[in-house]
Length: 128
Figure 1 (cartoon, rainbow, N blue to C red):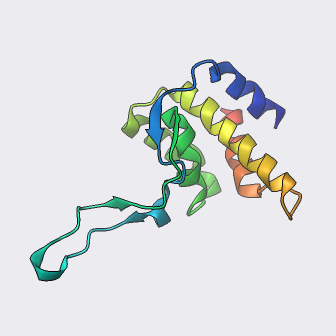
Figure 2: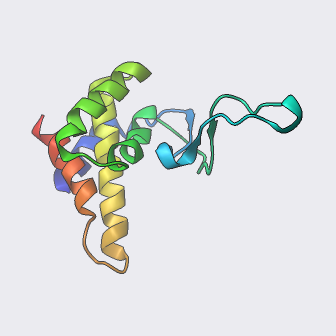
């Protein structure tokens, strides 16, 4: 967790000012539905936002931990940073910050231990 804190410390001076969803993962994106009376809803709908201003790299962790595949962490991370046009280093630092945040929440919670999925994402990003 200290390595996660060190990584986010590098980018904390430039927190970003983009509007973030903060909980964007596959369970919070609804596919298109045909509407009643011939009216259709827009093609895709993101639901349950937790609005936050920040760097888009802070958005990646939920998509990495949902439908988790430990062997696919880096491939999924690289694909998301490429498609979103993000600087990989900054996205890595912000994602590690999010790992730190989630682990601290878990330690303070009922379980008193960090989520192993978040830790696996952190280990993978720190190893590369």
